[in-house]
Amino acid sequence: MHGPLPLFDPEALRTLETRGTAHCDGDAFALMARAGQAAWRCVLKHWPQAMRIVIVCGPGNNGGDGYVLARHALESGRDVRVLRLREPATELARRACAEYSAAGGSVDAELGDCDLIVDALFGIGLSRAPDAEVTALIDAINAHSSPVLALDVPSGIDANTGSAPGAAVVADRSVQFIARHRGLRTGIAIDHAGKLELAALDLPQSLFDGIAASAFAYRADALSTFFPLRARDSHKGRNGHVLCIGGDHGGGGAVLLTAQAALRSGAGLVSVATRLQHVAALLSARPEAMVHALEDAAALAPLLERADVIAIGPGLGQGDWGRALFDAVIACDKPRVLDADALNILSERPQALLAASNHRLRTGDVITPHPGEAARLLGIGTADVQRDRFAAASALQDKFGCVVVLKGAGSIVASKDAPPAVICAGNPGMGTGGMGDLLTGVIASLRAQGFTARDAAIAGALLHAAAGDAAARDDGERGLLPSDLLPWLRCLANPVRR
Image: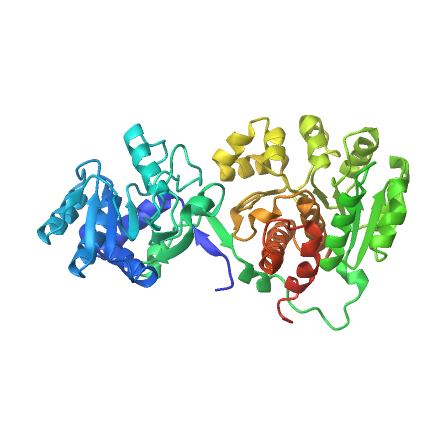
């Protein structure tokens, strides 16, 4: 599959469960039986040698799925134990438990030795921190040496936001039922969900009629949909002119990375406006860039006039020089990509900018904050941003009116009148200085090549993340440098030729 994957929130998933029950002639237990059997098939596929299996069952229907799995494992000759803290509390869970008991199943109070643990504690409904007793059990699961399979979502993870209000199971794999959960693709949930798998439960696609996805997941294989072959008579003028502005004293490397990324991702022309002290070094490192010494904002006007897209922020600083350039760029009518210090300056005076008709961000602009910058722009804490990354990205889009790339694990692209996009690529090695400077250049480059702001943000973030993964495959994540991504930007921006 090369297109984006639809993701759904818990409200939509509950509607799908209701429709799935109706498809099963109104028999909700038949749907539970399908889920439990699908989970058992997942066990057989990934852990065929697991003979001692512990299923941790909660009191609700997620626990019911676990009891169904337990019965299948028991009937196949496995040594099966169910661990539970509470009796089944729903009619479906009680029936599933009764069938497991009738097959000779037992209930235990400790994890003990096993080859596999199945987490069937809580499903998609949990959005609060587990109590002390459940927390102790989750801690025990996480401390155990055996692999963990989570049913639907890892217990303790909010399926809507991807956050963990308290303790949460760290699974090796999560099998989602009916549809993909949006909360498992971003933030802390990525480290808890492990590898993701979908069990559609043999339900028809018509089940989704009229139910809109709340987000879309973009994986590296979607790059081919963004980068067709260029026409044979293509020339530099058709591929856009990016002006990169930044590099105050000591920050020349940042704007150089932005310029290099813009070139390697296909811009026809790239100019750099920076401090005089950086010009020689930038020309030496990247002679293809047109580097201009700029000591005051008055000299910026002709460079702005010639450019198609402006990238501002990397190495800009927050002194008088950077602020003057920022004001000049905000007042111009060219599409802009703002990052780093441009966002820090913006966070100090957003209301004044929004109030002046000729000093504001527009729908064609893109901002690329990391969680700390997003927090400053919204006037909240970084933890608040991470608690609900979807809400934070949406709030930024509402406040500034432009396209937003909220960076981090599972970067989120928010734009007006479109579901958010989640970038399902990238790795921890990319958490080093300069990576964001590359992203600024990539997005500006694609914008200059004719991409809409939304497509430039999605394709740019995906290209950047996929390049990071490709570079990490060579020599590992630790010690990964932004410049290591540059050859891969070029390679992955040409997927049709590969």
